[in-house]
Image (tube, rainbow, N blue to C red; front, side, top):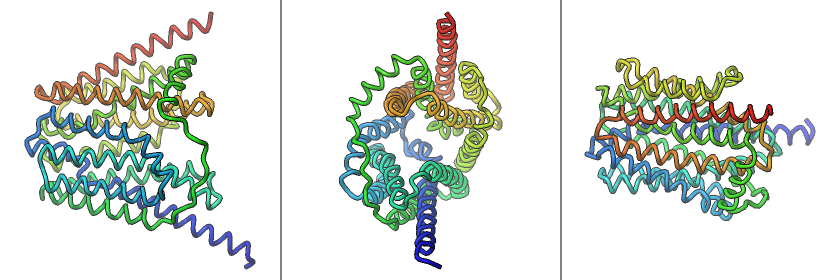
Length: 398
């Protein structure tokens, strides 16, 4: 075997190790058994629905505020160090929940969790790109990150089933298992090499990007349409944070809640898988109204069927996410895509906060009411999109 063949074989082995460690991290980063049950844990420790919603608002706000400085920190320090530290911060969050099971302890934990999510999101993408660039495989970036998402989803599903098995032993054991999974995922990141940073194009300040995105969005009806739908879909789907509390109202015990939530995400995985087969010219308004109906119907079906309706709701969400992303790639040029994404995220964040506010105001009357209001809101958006689309097509035809 000549030198070039040996070099190629060594590089292939290194790429294989990189992929395995990234997939290992992705799985254990989401193999968090407390995920499907943490709202029930808050409720069990005396928190009201309004207090639980306020905690979720703090989590969302922390991520939103820290996303921009997080990118700058990752450009200054070792990305492997930033990722490892951020992952371990979430272990501290769960330790805080374990030692201080009250509103302040949960609040501090959510702030720490928000720090983790803000520092991992963009930093992980840059880290993976730099590693693949170093190995001259940057063209595989989309495939590798796609597989990472798949492993993460499997981790979430199996974590839900694990929570169902351990639910009878109490929240403390489930938190300890979650902390152990986090430590394993941090170890996987720390074992990766620290790639030399690739010089990327200089990023514009977030507000500057956002303003440019608003101008582009308002000038282009196609961009406005895609951004609006994406913001609605991603902003309102956070109702899943309240599934556990809703199932608890339906008299499901903690074990059944965890198993049903894991099952709902199985539907989500199926939605991602079959999305390409659903790529037909269906009216967006009709799709959103059906999506809303699945959410609303879940509140009036017999308890045994409600999770199935919510599972189909999740299936449609993941399928729509894939299809919207594909539409974005085909319809929007590269220089516009980043700005359009900024606008989508910004609007979606406000809709997310609105959902949390709805449940904060209505939780004392039952979580089914909150689901009803969000379902009606989605249906209204569907009608608005339908009317706007019809007006646009008539105007274009003239």
